[in-house]
Length: 210
Image (cartoon, rainbow, N blue to C red; front, side):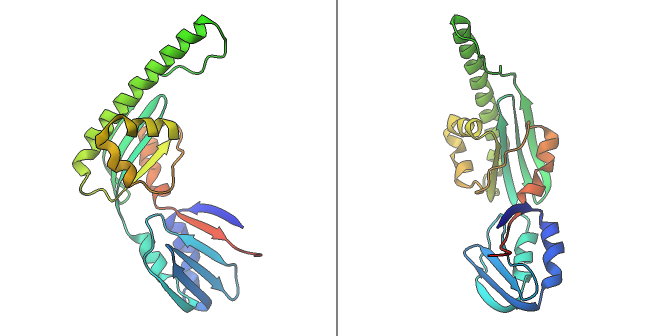
């Protein structure tokens, strides 16, 4: 079994030619199973869900492709110690954003009192980053709160958790979070701008040989 995330355009390119081919398609539980008579079985789970539930006596891919083609309003919070990026996407277009950096010392490997001072300084720097990122997230995303359908969280899990826990008015971001966590590299504007490919990528599982 092979599992990977594939961009929605590539999913369409691969599956569209199979529409109507002999075999079957089963939709349910937020995913689609395709079993062509002459080809590999594959399961596709769209990132924003799939409400369609039905079984077809042929390979019917159009309900899946329609779900993948839909655009959504998504809020994004990407955080690592050292930087953050917050944004709002309408479809694949970034319509609001703010990024920032704050120096946070790396880990100190030596012992003694110097290590304790280093640790305290590092904790202070990390807390300053978390507080700043939380303030920015609230400022950028709150005006979009009634329109944002889902949120994308990424970077470092511990850092993101700390940011969301820093303010009660950020609780809604976790409640609307997509199941997938996006372990992006250093949060910069260019990284945020490239996020839509991953946002709209579907989980594809090859079942050949099972």
